[in-house]
Length: 466
Image (cartoon, rainbow, N blue to C red; front, side, top):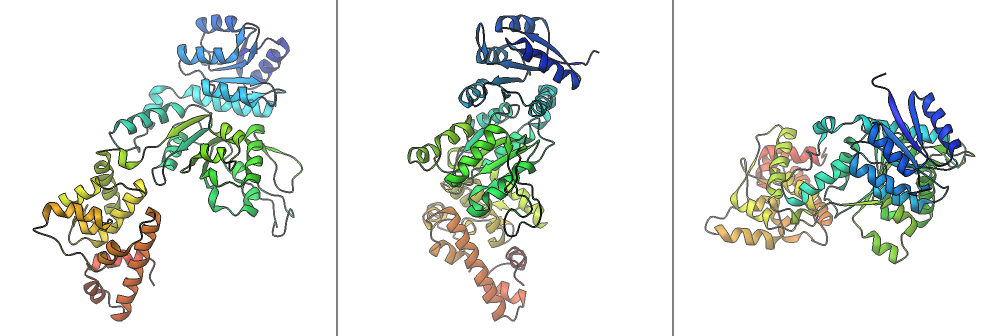
């Protein structure tokens, strides 16, 4: 029995210790009980365990103290806490102290089994096994990214809800995916949801599912997003866009770990890791009464900030090289090179759209550049940024292509997204006009537009021009 799974149960009620021991025994887990914090510490000093379950109210202290003790002195031991029914504030405190998860009294044995299975996956994931799954996709060498990478690695083994803050396009979904991929749920589904893209009248059905006949159009039973994420991770992007009515229902689903489909009579237990994100300031929205404070505290157990690209120094060059390699492979072309002026322009740009904007800029530049070198005008940055970079080499300016000129001069810069959308519209309209004027002769249209035939073919495919 060298590899027998062992659990330590701490509760001052012998009946609960016995109930949990029987439940774990049926799962093939050998359980040992302790009635106090001091007894538990003595046992932990003498023996090794794969999981620990502890009540929060014990005769000689607070169970959160035991959670902190295990975090500091025992490696790779997930701790789940047992809380009084409805006492979410204490459960959140325990999660912040490092608890893996929580279960409420009276204990639902099915939910307990789900919790145990997830916790054992954490216990089995040793640091050596995790080494191959580090957050390598968080490219960069800046101190901010190094710190973010370290926190992602640590948070991956927890079940605590994480709120990922950061500007639009900074990589919040990438961070959420990495937390999922490096954690015990990596074999389960990762379900990303853009909360702002779901019509309010369909939101409850999308999140919780519905029963046949629940409303007009419900021709069959349908599972919701929570059920789809069962045994995996549910990522709520732009969670600030949830209407108040849905915030109440989401809070209940999180606390009860169960959902009730629209038109259903029974709740369905769900086992998900919840991650959320938004580019808005949730604290400000709470102060304005536009976001529920209780939901904010529930999803913001641990906060993780993704730094904006403009604060990451030389990471811009590292990311640029990686993006150009990717784009070259996608389009089966040699990797383009940046001119010195183009590099200076990117280093001096504030990137309101962050990494997403950098990708769009480089994708557009590949189609604009002559040969295999991207110059500053190919980036189509705002005229002030482009002008500053051009000052360093005004003696040998390059002639911008016909498509680049109106982009730099006319694009509205109210936001990065507006700018990118405008650029796409301008390019597509000019290409269609040139093709029509040349009777869809691509070679002649490319010459009129001042671009290579390769660049024109790429754009025709990108904009799906028939």
